[in-house]
Length: 227
Image (cartoon, rainbow, N blue to C red; front, side, top):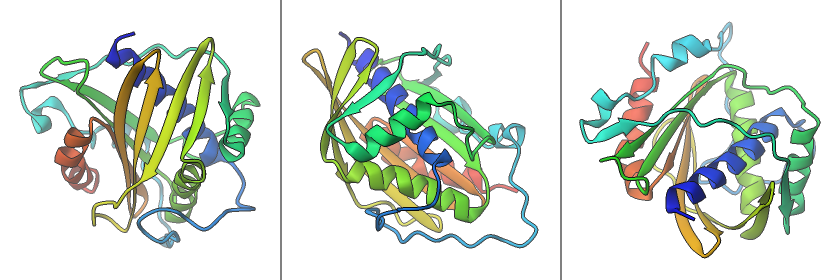
């Protein structure tokens, strides 16, 4: 199995769990295991940005440089996602299967490879909602993943061995979270960095090759803040 397939599957599994976490209720939250305290305050009269408005704030190849190539959106599969060895994440996975609505319907995303290399991906996702909902939603995701340093994600007939490590987040935005995710599938191993930064009513999530995330997370936040 090639590395880009490993990374794609792992990110798809992560996305399924993450989106479900955003739709979970607010009870039973454990203390956050991230690099910034949770608790965004909502601006009076603030209106979340539409998906169309968010799409205009995504990084483009012009922002990144000529060595970056846009990646087409991958076809989503309907395989059930099951988590083994992490009850907190397993609960979120089962919730996903019930088809609950998401709290973050306003979103936009983009993905690129560096110099056409399948091993050098960087992905950006933008979400908009009230500050408190963004803070609580993304905090749940990172809390749940940090609660289990190792576990497995089963998607269809594929089993992904996962290792999660909470790391220091960049001092950007009002709140921020960061982690390293190691995926192992069929003897192949990939390391992905994921950083989430909240600024007001916008959440910026940058994931992919650690070096590319470090290089572009500030630029992504700056463009997301443009008014």
